[in-house]
Image 1 (cartoon, rainbow, N blue to C red):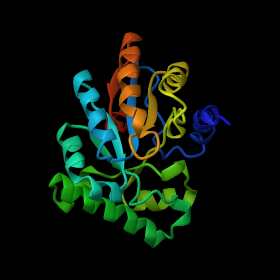
Image 2: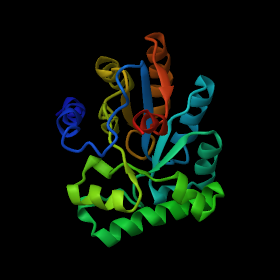
Image 3: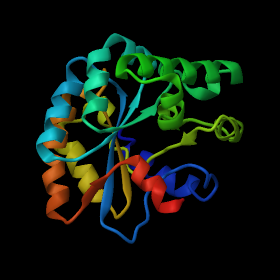
Image 4: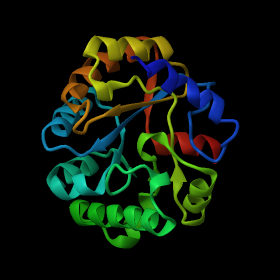
Length: 227
Protein backbone atom coordinates (compact mmCIF):
# COMPACT_ATOMS: atom_id res chain seq x y z
CA UNK A 1 0.00 0.00 0.00
CA UNK A 2 1.38 3.39 -0.98
CA UNK A 3 1.60 6.02 1.77
CA UNK A 4 3.77 8.53 -0.10
CA UNK A 5 0.88 10.92 -0.75
CA UNK A 6 -0.04 10.83 2.94
CA UNK A 7 3.53 11.55 4.07
CA UNK A 8 3.59 14.63 1.89
CA UNK A 9 0.06 15.74 2.83
CA UNK A 10 0.48 15.55 6.61
CA UNK A 11 2.95 18.47 6.79
CA UNK A 12 0.30 20.80 5.37
CA UNK A 13 -1.95 19.83 8.29
CA UNK A 14 0.68 19.92 11.03
CA UNK A 15 2.64 23.01 10.03
CA UNK A 16 0.05 25.52 11.34
CA UNK A 17 -0.18 23.56 14.62
CA UNK A 18 3.58 23.30 15.13
CA UNK A 19 5.09 26.49 13.66
CA UNK A 20 8.28 26.02 15.70
CA UNK A 21 9.41 23.30 13.27
CA UNK A 22 11.03 23.98 9.93
CA UNK A 23 8.71 22.51 7.29
CA UNK A 24 9.68 24.44 4.17
CA UNK A 25 11.26 27.57 2.86
CA UNK A 26 9.44 30.65 1.70
CA UNK A 27 7.38 30.04 -1.41
CA UNK A 28 8.33 33.32 -3.09
CA UNK A 29 11.57 31.92 -4.52
CA UNK A 30 12.27 28.88 -6.76
CA UNK A 31 14.45 27.08 -4.23
CA UNK A 32 14.46 23.52 -2.91
CA UNK A 33 16.47 21.76 -0.23
CA UNK A 34 17.60 18.17 -0.64
CA UNK A 35 18.00 16.31 2.65
CA UNK A 36 19.08 12.77 3.42
CA UNK A 37 18.33 10.69 6.52
CA UNK A 38 19.73 7.55 8.18
CA UNK A 39 23.36 7.80 7.09
CA UNK A 40 26.21 7.90 6.72
CA UNK A 41 26.44 4.58 4.91
CA UNK A 42 29.84 3.19 3.87
CA UNK A 43 28.70 2.43 0.31
CA UNK A 44 25.61 4.46 -0.52
CA UNK A 45 26.73 7.82 0.87
CA UNK A 46 30.00 8.02 -1.12
CA UNK A 47 28.05 7.27 -4.30
CA UNK A 48 25.67 10.10 -3.47
CA UNK A 49 28.51 12.49 -2.63
CA UNK A 50 29.96 11.98 -6.10
CA UNK A 51 26.64 13.01 -7.67
CA UNK A 52 26.36 16.09 -5.47
CA UNK A 53 29.94 17.09 -6.21
CA UNK A 54 29.42 16.77 -9.97
CA UNK A 55 26.27 18.84 -9.68
CA UNK A 56 28.03 21.42 -7.51
CA UNK A 57 25.22 21.59 -4.98
CA UNK A 58 25.11 21.38 -1.21
CA UNK A 59 22.61 19.16 0.57
CA UNK A 60 21.67 18.46 4.20
CA UNK A 61 22.33 15.19 5.99
CA UNK A 62 20.60 14.01 9.18
CA UNK A 63 22.84 11.40 10.74
CA UNK A 64 22.41 8.51 13.13
CA UNK A 65 25.18 8.51 15.72
CA UNK A 66 25.75 4.79 15.44
CA UNK A 67 26.21 5.08 11.66
CA UNK A 68 28.70 7.92 12.14
CA UNK A 69 30.73 5.67 14.44
CA UNK A 70 30.62 2.86 11.87
CA UNK A 71 31.64 5.07 8.92
CA UNK A 72 33.67 7.97 10.35
CA UNK A 73 35.67 8.53 7.15
CA UNK A 74 32.46 8.93 5.15
CA UNK A 75 31.10 11.35 7.73
CA UNK A 76 34.31 13.37 7.54
CA UNK A 77 34.20 13.46 3.72
CA UNK A 78 30.58 14.63 3.79
CA UNK A 79 31.39 17.43 6.20
CA UNK A 80 34.53 18.45 4.31
CA UNK A 81 32.54 18.64 1.08
CA UNK A 82 30.52 21.44 2.67
CA UNK A 83 27.17 19.78 3.26
CA UNK A 84 24.95 20.80 6.15
CA UNK A 85 24.80 18.29 8.99
CA UNK A 86 21.91 17.57 11.35
CA UNK A 87 20.97 14.97 13.95
CA UNK A 88 18.61 12.00 13.59
CA UNK A 89 19.26 10.40 16.97
CA UNK A 90 21.88 7.86 17.97
CA UNK A 91 19.71 4.98 16.72
CA UNK A 92 16.51 5.06 14.71
CA UNK A 93 14.24 4.85 17.76
CA UNK A 94 11.20 7.12 17.59
CA UNK A 95 11.56 9.99 20.02
CA UNK A 96 8.18 9.40 21.74
CA UNK A 97 9.55 6.01 22.86
CA UNK A 98 12.42 7.71 24.70
CA UNK A 99 12.37 9.35 28.10
CA UNK A 100 13.51 12.96 28.28
CA UNK A 101 16.87 11.83 29.61
CA UNK A 102 17.24 9.19 26.90
CA UNK A 103 16.45 11.75 24.19
CA UNK A 104 19.05 14.14 25.55
CA UNK A 105 21.62 11.34 25.72
CA UNK A 106 20.80 10.20 22.17
CA UNK A 107 21.43 13.65 20.71
CA UNK A 108 24.52 14.40 22.80
CA UNK A 109 26.01 11.02 21.96
CA UNK A 110 25.41 11.67 18.26
CA UNK A 111 27.07 15.06 18.52
CA UNK A 112 30.04 13.37 20.17
CA UNK A 113 30.32 10.87 17.34
CA UNK A 114 30.23 13.69 14.81
CA UNK A 115 32.88 15.64 16.72
CA UNK A 116 35.21 12.63 16.63
CA UNK A 117 34.59 11.78 12.98
CA UNK A 118 34.73 15.34 11.62
CA UNK A 119 37.58 16.50 13.88
CA UNK A 120 35.50 19.17 15.58
CA UNK A 121 35.57 20.33 19.16
CA UNK A 122 32.51 19.65 21.34
CA UNK A 123 31.78 23.39 21.45
CA UNK A 124 31.94 23.62 17.64
CA UNK A 125 29.48 20.74 17.28
CA UNK A 126 27.14 22.18 19.89
CA UNK A 127 27.10 25.50 18.05
CA UNK A 128 26.93 24.26 14.44
CA UNK A 129 25.12 20.93 14.55
CA UNK A 130 21.81 21.40 16.32
CA UNK A 131 19.18 20.71 13.67
CA UNK A 132 17.15 17.63 14.61
CA UNK A 133 14.84 15.57 12.45
CA UNK A 134 12.85 13.02 14.52
CA UNK A 135 13.03 9.44 13.19
CA UNK A 136 9.83 8.55 11.34
CA UNK A 137 8.77 12.18 11.75
CA UNK A 138 7.22 11.38 15.13
CA UNK A 139 7.20 13.94 17.92
CA UNK A 140 4.96 15.40 20.61
CA UNK A 141 4.51 18.97 21.89
CA UNK A 142 6.58 17.96 24.94
CA UNK A 143 9.43 16.75 22.70
CA UNK A 144 9.41 19.99 20.72
CA UNK A 145 9.51 21.95 23.96
CA UNK A 146 12.49 19.91 25.15
CA UNK A 147 14.33 20.38 21.87
CA UNK A 148 13.87 24.13 22.04
CA UNK A 149 14.93 24.27 25.69
CA UNK A 150 18.12 22.37 24.81
CA UNK A 151 18.84 24.78 21.91
CA UNK A 152 18.05 22.36 19.09
CA UNK A 153 16.11 23.26 15.95
CA UNK A 154 13.41 20.75 14.89
CA UNK A 155 13.25 20.03 11.16
CA UNK A 156 10.55 18.17 9.26
CA UNK A 157 9.87 18.06 5.51
CA UNK A 158 7.57 19.03 2.66
CA UNK A 159 8.04 16.00 0.38
CA UNK A 160 8.66 12.40 1.48
CA UNK A 161 8.40 10.10 -1.57
CA UNK A 162 8.59 6.88 0.47
CA UNK A 163 11.95 5.96 -1.05
CA UNK A 164 12.79 3.79 1.98
CA UNK A 165 10.56 1.00 0.65
CA UNK A 166 12.46 1.05 -2.67
CA UNK A 167 9.51 1.62 -5.05
CA UNK A 168 11.93 2.21 -7.93
CA UNK A 169 14.05 5.14 -9.05
CA UNK A 170 11.60 6.43 -11.65
CA UNK A 171 8.70 6.26 -9.19
CA UNK A 172 10.53 8.31 -6.58
CA UNK A 173 11.60 10.94 -9.11
CA UNK A 174 8.09 11.12 -10.57
CA UNK A 175 6.55 11.66 -7.12
CA UNK A 176 8.94 14.47 -6.28
CA UNK A 177 8.45 16.25 -9.59
CA UNK A 178 4.69 16.02 -9.12
CA UNK A 179 4.73 17.58 -5.65
CA UNK A 180 7.64 20.01 -5.81
CA UNK A 181 6.91 23.65 -5.15
CA UNK A 182 8.94 26.74 -4.27
CA UNK A 183 10.61 26.26 -0.91
CA UNK A 184 10.18 22.48 -0.84
CA UNK A 185 12.17 20.50 1.71
CA UNK A 186 12.69 17.03 0.22
CA UNK A 187 13.67 14.03 2.34
CA UNK A 188 15.44 11.01 0.86
CA UNK A 189 17.49 8.26 2.52
CA UNK A 190 21.11 7.22 2.12
CA UNK A 191 21.02 4.55 4.83
CA UNK A 192 20.19 0.86 4.94
CA UNK A 193 16.65 1.34 3.64
CA UNK A 194 16.38 3.16 0.32
CA UNK A 195 20.04 4.03 0.10
CA UNK A 196 20.80 1.59 -2.68
CA UNK A 197 18.91 3.87 -5.11
CA UNK A 198 19.74 7.27 -3.66
CA UNK A 199 22.65 8.17 -5.95
CA UNK A 200 20.70 7.27 -9.08
CA UNK A 201 17.66 9.16 -7.80
CA UNK A 202 19.74 12.27 -7.17
CA UNK A 203 21.45 11.99 -10.56
CA UNK A 204 18.07 12.03 -12.32
CA UNK A 205 16.29 14.44 -10.01
CA UNK A 206 18.80 17.28 -9.81
CA UNK A 207 18.94 18.18 -13.53
CA UNK A 208 15.17 17.92 -13.82
CA UNK A 209 14.69 20.37 -10.99
CA UNK A 210 17.35 22.66 -12.42
CA UNK A 211 15.60 22.58 -15.79
CA UNK A 212 12.50 23.94 -14.07
CA UNK A 213 14.53 26.81 -12.61
CA UNK A 214 15.01 25.56 -9.06
CA UNK A 215 18.13 26.43 -7.09
CA UNK A 216 19.41 24.18 -4.32
CA UNK A 217 19.89 25.38 -0.76
CA UNK A 218 20.57 23.79 2.62
CA UNK A 219 18.35 23.49 5.66
CA UNK A 220 20.34 26.28 7.27
CA UNK A 221 19.55 28.52 4.30
CA UNK A 222 15.84 27.82 4.87
CA UNK A 223 16.13 28.77 8.55
CA UNK A 224 17.83 32.03 7.57
CA UNK A 225 14.78 33.00 5.51
CA UNK A 226 12.75 33.22 8.70
CA UNK A 227 15.26 34.52 11.25
